[in-house]
Length: 477
Image (cartoon, helix red, strand yellow):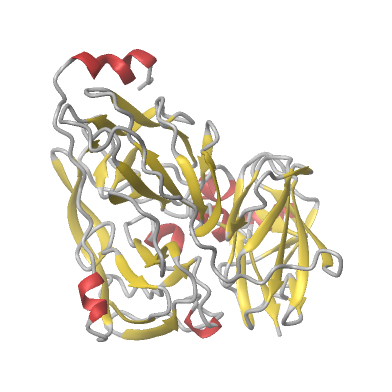
């Protein structure tokens, strides 16, 4: 489906079609009691698209799972129970949250998988406000693709002034004509290629389209939190003539600025926007992914009702930054990591479980396709050597070099890093992130303070790439 300028504006002179947006369940009220929140991973039947119910896995009976909502400074107490079929062990990783290492939810690294029929209690302080999410780290290429994910919002002490807020959780599913999922999780073509791309993109658990969306009154200010939970799909965002202001990347405040055209929201990445609705009654703006399928994700329509106000709010939209240690670039240790492999390019040799292996064996014998610094790892293998060992409090500059033909959204657990350079060009905002896109044949320079003790995952968040060898750890001691 191709989105044209005419499609974006054609409804301006007509009556507004009703827009719907699936409401996300919330556990905010439970958090206020001080009792542990309950998350149950289990089978779900849900209609992702009209006409058929799909067998999925979800938290608390829905896909996405409930929005967990708490305040900065709270302590999260969450009891996760496993009701998945086929003796599937699971865990929960709190993506982007600076938790104690034992609470990070990585099997064979920070905990054992939770067996079917058992539970695990997570408890950790909420040191950062922002937009985060939760998902399994056990066979995540399958468990996330089946629907096990949800948003985790930590509110600021002093939130910015807006009229309303929306959370858009974007997903990607590969469905058969009968509505059931294609059971090809972890197949060789997806591990070594672009990942497992679906054919049904969802917004808050329903197929995207022109009828999904919301209506704003002129002058209304919206805070929009977007989250890409897809295992592989990279979204190229277009707001059809609206000019959103970016106020946070991956939950961390950034100097407010217009969202760049064609912004890439990769798997695992989050984006906070502020939109001031123009005084344009009846106009509709298509929010689209223009990268692959040319999909309209949703519609933002301006109501024909009287404007809420005649001009935008004067209140500042800059978020209060979280307390992150600033790396000392003059004293920082310098490190490189090189990504190689994939079906379109491969290293001559790599290390598998610490042993040299020819490329043919890496791919055929071990079903691994990627290396980081010539090292390929089975998912969460304990037989690896950490990629890096850092002293607690050490300032680190890390240059990621991508020698492959594919993008890699690289995610570091337990920390945030400043993005200094992309393709050797200084970034204009030096934003904090926990997941950054490294383009084919490109590079990214980041800096951070290694201040969270433990062994932390560092991996590609195209989850098939991680399962195909692009996974390792860094140790802070």
